[in-house]
Amino acid sequence: AGGSALDAAERGVMVTEAAVTNRSVGLTGYPDRDGIVTLDACIMDGDGRAGSVSFVQGIKHPVALARKVIDQTPHVMMVGKGAEQYARELGIEQLANTLPPDVQKAWEDWKRTAKYQPVINIENHDTIGLVLMDASGRMAGACTTSGLAWKMHGRVGASQIIGAGLYVDNEVGAATCTGVGEYE
Ligand code: GLY
Image 1 (tube, rainbow, N blue to C red):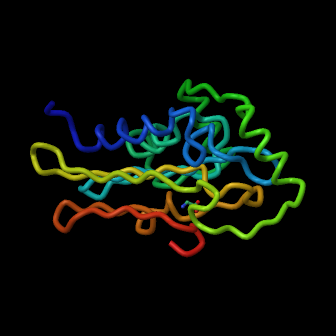
Image 2: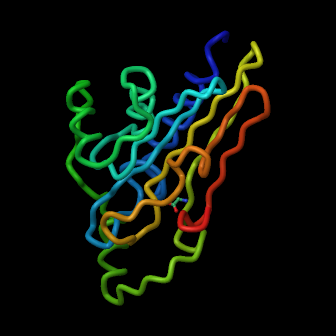
């Protein structure tokens, strides 16, 4: 409709971040081993501008916060409490860590053995990455995840790392990838 690729990348992955049945992206993703959902996201424009947030809690749309990092800060990456503080300053509501009943149950079940040998896709784990080109030929992309189920509190993967989970260059192309974030 004539909008920018960057806007479309942000809006596109926001659909998945808000999908309440999704267990690997957004606030309804599986939590870490302490029952806390932590999120990672990034967004990049084909002109080289990029924003990324990592280890954020209670933010419904981490990709929108990553977009603010591009538009309103001189930085590229923000993490944890500082990123959450920035969200509050922007008026973005920080929600409580409330697990959907089936997620709560899955976590309780996992805690019985607390066995942790992450194998991609067996835990319904994945990430959404989106790359696209707008009508004027400009590219953009975004990548967002709740990370590995039952991860250690504080663990982050590579989805939100510019150059690992996502890279976009109008002159060359765009790519996004996922897998076990330790190896991406
Ligand atoms: N692929 C996302 C992660 O490992 O966190």
